[in-house]
Length: 120
Image 1 (spheres, rainbow, N blue to C red):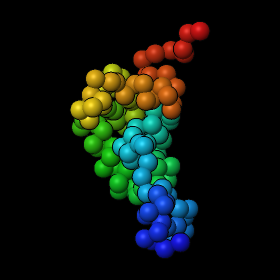
Image 2: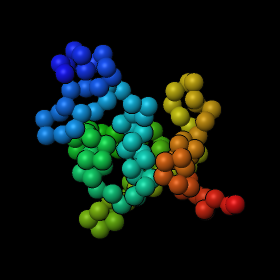
Image 3: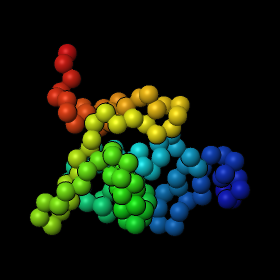
């Protein structure tokens, strides 16, 4: 498959040393980083980068973006960093700005940070 045909098929060419990635996804890297932190608040930046498929530098920049926008807080705990998701933050895009990211987190990672298990 050539690079041009892979673009038209919706697939990128295989990356050296890794599997092919789709040309586009429904969630941005920012969304994937936020979900990684929601799943594991003590996750290392290198593990976030590996999970999302980005560089460590890109993961650090995204964490900085999310913190400055109010979606999460970072705190040093010994030699590690602990992340806390700030609940009830709204999506940034005007088409979804009325919705809170808590729903996305619940969908992929479980209950929002200030909620217990779902009642049945």
